[in-house]
Image 1 (cartoon, helix red, strand yellow):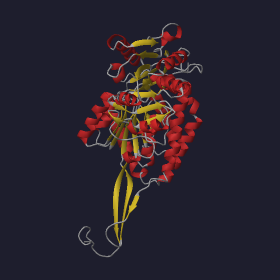
Image 2: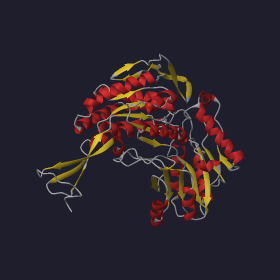
Image 3: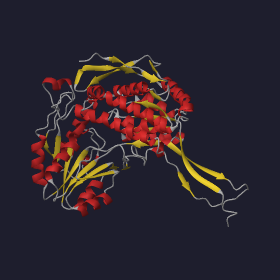
Image 4: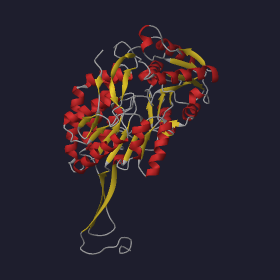
Length: 498
């Protein structure tokens, strides 16, 4: 095992200790003997320092031409590409998902940087005719200032890239608090920005607990925007605090995503999608397939195929290339998964057909491993069909028609991702129209979003904002309307033109 590292905060272009002098450990959830490193247990004083550095840097960063900012982001992405394997290996050690997936996580950040770099020449405004002669009207984008990012542990570098790259290309500066469980990946990200030559204070990282560091960021008057990805409970709390402070807040919260399989579907393809959607990242994705909605005509055949494939999944340390499913991220998450398995068996009275236990013995004893788990005979109002587990637990529901499938899929408080497998183009387009979700896949699993399309959900999943793509720029910029009068006289709109 590599030697553990002593990580610091990154503030104003310097690696610095926290004001508290306290530290916490970060260990590999597949092998708790593996200490990745120790991190600063920061407090509001560190947030104050980071905000002051970001505010000072904003004075000049906002004046750097956007195409030049784009070139710097491009350079950072190229450095990240060069360090891809190193960054991915550490990411697997700190959060557990298999190495193929952490390579994908890092690649997503690289792709996001390439995309954002191009936006440096596409921060388009809008010209429109005005009411009066010899007068010009245009709307332009302006940066908003210091932006705060509070990021989750399941995509430790991809999600920070979704938030930071768009903010930076728009001319803002950043203060980021990484998830307590996965700070090493964001520390690596800061090293990339440093090597790329970003001016001091443009990007800043403060590690520590959400109840201290996150709270200080939300309450800080010098932070003008907060972007948060995490739990519904914390997101709603932060949203109310930001509303009280008059601070714009972008929330990406929970999901209870469903995959519909119709009776005309390509079953082999749908099985592959269900396995990947439910058990990729050990089910620890906000877009994970947690509900499988099967037409009754193919239910039994599909379940036979699914169980046959599920039994072949290999679970273990994500650094071993042969493994397909890693550990849960922590002991607490493992306990949550096991709790919901118990709820499904004893409260919901659904039928456990595969998995359902903590894996023990040998190397499993050093980590937090839960078997990929499948329940059938689940009905829409059961807790397993309504509540987010965030683990490798799949609920299977049976329906008798397309209309019922859509009704069941929509019957949750969430609306992030969705999927339908069908060879009927008419049903596919009806599903696109009728499914209540921010993302719909046709003949693909509920996971696999790309960086150049908007990412986000409806209902309880978020608060209307989107990440990635071009729409995220609406959160990180403010619109300014500009009128240029070249008539040489006073012209009174809505008065003199009548």
